[in-house]
Length: 144
Image (tube, rainbow, N blue to C red; front, side, top):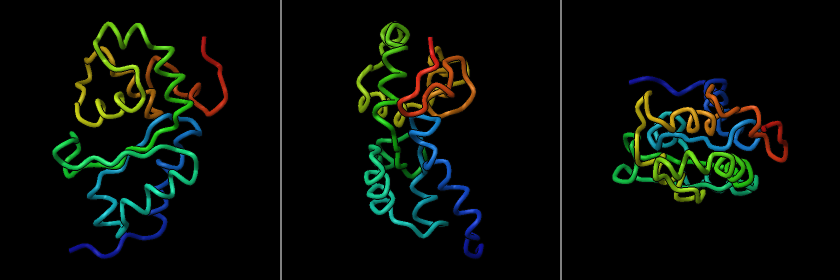
């Protein structure tokens, strides 16, 4: 059995969630990462994200494509901007344009690399994609 995770590793893991609202619209942590190696509590992390003005949604293993479930955190303003700019793409693929339903959908459905919405989802998570992840910073708009 592995020993405790060093503090610098814990910081690196949480830094991903800290970027939500500051360069990405959505982030997540698998429940197994929160509860086991980090010795954390999903409710405590969720409360911290809510205190930052972010939204948080916890999904158990039955609701989520991530083994064991996950905590998804999103910035309403950044996500709404992304969904609004992609409304035609979402509609054409019968995906929700409502923020909470969109988060539920990405939590429950694993997208293959050739899925028509993969660039949009990657951008929401701040990864490279054609939608422009740098434009997702809260209150900032560099997009078309």
